[in-house]
Image 1 (tube, rainbow, N blue to C red):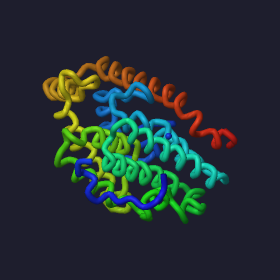
Image 2: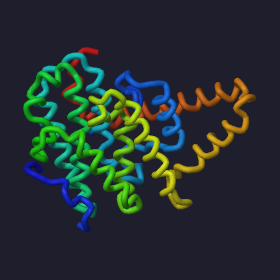
Image 3: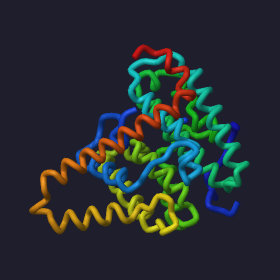
Length: 272
């Protein structure tokens, strides 16, 4: 599905190594924020996540983690075509599954922008055909979406209950290192971390007893406990926390690698 689409009015009826600092950048506070988010949010992979938007994009999100690690790549055209085909297929599946067309357009816009940012952030991507025609220009006739993604986020936050799935998807993109317009700002990383924190708190308020992945209880309990015993936090407690977080990350990484094999077929030709 190619051609011009617009984000205007989207709210009308209607495809590995870490999260937020996956590209090796980011402050200690960013790492702590992501660790907390991971502890509260049990990310699931394709076929198991309650959010169809996150579920459908997992392989492509895995591709983002992979391309950031590549120092050289010469089959950019083939890769982009494969990704474009996957996005078009995902677009069709979501519409057939009953998602609002406007939501699918906004979702596709964010996904294209996120993947473009990752590829064009590499030396090989910035000097390739991808820089001449990005996914965003291919699907939306726009050259840069770093500004509009946050405009989409802002508008959807006005009705969080209705747009929870999209808010969760944007949250995942932020956790995986998306910066958009903040990438070129002097204090962009701090601003982006603040948005991530606020969005996480908002999603916590939407959690219900019936939600398969409640967000509120874990962070609330950890934060309260930390403040009460700040001066007497046992060493073994910190060790246990590190072990648990390492286990969560390891399981996520193993499962993610299993899911992105097909999408990354063309990349498998690269030397390890």
